[in-house]
Image 1 (spheres, rainbow, N blue to C red):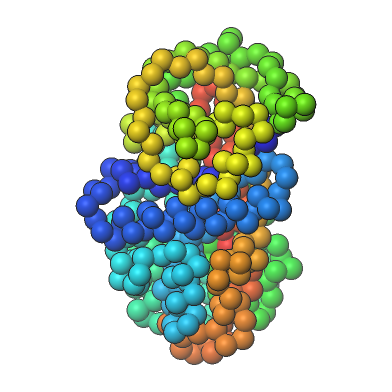
Image 2 (tube, rainbow, N blue to C red):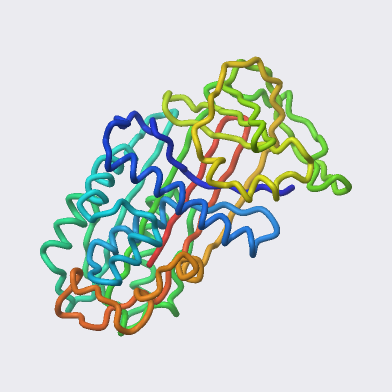
Length: 352
């Protein structure tokens, strides 16, 4: 079973945000471009199933970029495909992030940011204000020299924010007395289908990895009126499965050919474009599945053009003017998704 998941891609009408907001439109286009770049780099290395959240990585890196200057800052704008100025980026995130605070019995969509700083590090006031006012980030002093205790504190925060779905994000060996700052983003989603699948209709069916390679998987089934579109250019079908709550859905893209995924992946930016859906009576067969992935973002980001931030000479003087040698040593993400008859639970956390 070959399955690739991008957690929380954005659309122009995402989360009921006004589409006339120019900064947000630029942010959406950039998010699609960055997500496409991330996906392409991962699929070149991963042969099996994977899940990744470009948005989680983009959020924490955009916060980091708020304290970058000069060529370091410009590489973030280009590599992350952020809006053309820091002001637009901050306006877009200030518009968007409050919408990632939905919590009800049927749907939860929650994002959080946290900055851990060494006891003797002094953050610039402007950066602190941006972190708290724009990114709603907590800031906490921590003793990195006690690496085990520091790791337990950071990982405990991540576990609490992801409903205990993301564990051990930070390795104790990655933290030491020379660590100055750690930034973390968490993203958690839990949603019930608007049209639930009946357990009694789930049965074993063949899923074709290739024309010759098929595996039997638990396959959910339902017949319902859903948003559907057959895209002739991409030679693929698009199906929208809505969650209760009205403005969040899962988009499933199915190539017409049994080995058509590779062709579809070459046009990934087009996959993100809004499709002219029409309500159609559809017989849906969807495998139940659960995926967990780990992604080392640093080599991906270097491929996308962000390089100075990882080497001596990086300019993060907007974060702290007293710390002259700040560089990013690693960007790492863990992500999880579980799809069942009732709905979907997913989480991601990125540390940098």
